[in-house]
Amino acid sequence: MNLLGLPRAELEAFVAARLGAKPFRARQLMKWIYRRGAADFSSMTDLSQDFRSQLSEGRQDCGSGIVAEQVSSDGTRKWMLRMDEVQGIETVYIPEPDRGTLCISSQVGCAMDCSFCSTAQQGFNRNLSVAEIVGQVWLAHRELAAHAEGSDDARGCPSRTRRRPRQHH
Image (tube, rainbow, N blue to C red; front, side, top):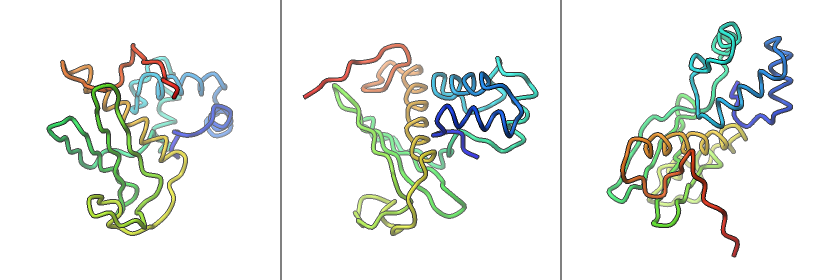
């Protein structure tokens, strides 16, 4: 089961019913996943070892892994994510001087057949689940934050400590 995209109430119910844990464990888990970007349950040190083992053994996860990453000279990053044994999707981050744009997939395959997009080359297969869509945003934020922490030039990359206010037009 992919934990990304579960609303808090559903995660609390899952943790209680399937893992026999108190609802506060779900809130701790959400902090690790969404605030700290943790994907490995063993790194979630304020969760009991038994609870972490249950999560790992139950094959819960926090989204798709990166199959391939391409980085262009302008800082654009394209991640290929595997959805199953055969099909994948792309998530693309495009940095700009004053912002960044994240292109996420909402479907496996696409009927548009754009020549530059490998997702479109598959043809349409299915819509993505909420967890799969949220997982792309989560993964991009995690990857970009890691890149920003290890780089002097993190143009447009999100920071864990600094947030830019939204501009309304």
